[in-house]
Image (tube, rainbow, N blue to C red):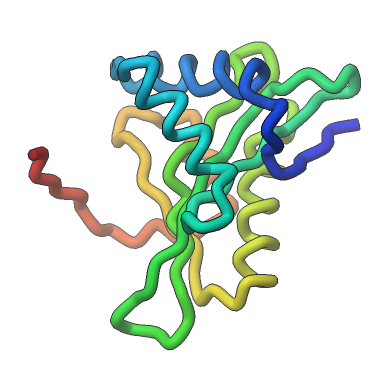
Length: 147
């Protein structure tokens, strides 16, 4: 049975291959210290960043999701930005992606957030099939300035 649960300090070794797979999918590399810092912030209760793992029947981590909260100008409640979502190639189609998004959605509702949102690459058509069933495509285009 698939289980989704919050990250805990002992999860680094299970989270790391998923994080690495996510970065490889987006053709990105980060220094090991940034990866470690990210994991630590996901566990730090003073930071509005959170993470969860999807575990298969054997307790192996097969998917991960990381999210953060922030205030919004159009609402009294916070928004939840689902920043990172990844399911291992051998577990795709298992329902892990749907379960991870549902976990964030339930967390957001319990926290009083007014919306959950995320971005994906235009080329990520497989994931978009799931996203189109779970959320509304807004039509916004993403811009960014790197510093």
